[in-house]
Length: 200
Image (cartoon, rainbow, N blue to C red; front, side, top):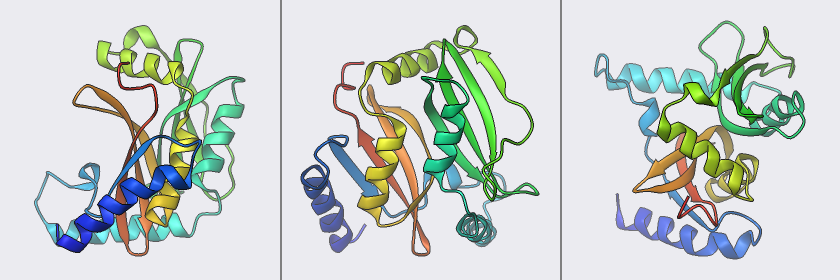
């Protein structure tokens, strides 16, 4: 990371709370390709870059935003909250894959990125079938005031782009929102620690 990039990241982390008072307390923006998009199979960096470029182009041509996809999925069950969302342009029709939490179940929804329609049915998985760490993360999500939709809004402003995926991650014992944002031709990963999530 260059000195300019360090200063930019540092300034964003300082300025962000002042910009969005009601938003999560701290944002860390990195301009590198997010870890989830690195391929471990063949090590062909050029093929990886081309695949990411194709995904970004399909994302940009979509009519539905990630925030709209989350709202559509959450509306399926009153009181549901989104735990994870990602854009998938690799299959025939570009879709958002949205996981919502409602009544001790994780609901999986596939939302058409062009029309906003639900693709196929929805599937539910009881929380009891998840491992302990996932159950703990989801319990913490239910206990904090901020939602993934809040984190998406903050990340899009911080990285000057549009979110393509987001979810919960636990790093060094802290629950964070991790949002990947398309900004220009780059992908930026924004990590936000929701207030009240430190001890969860």
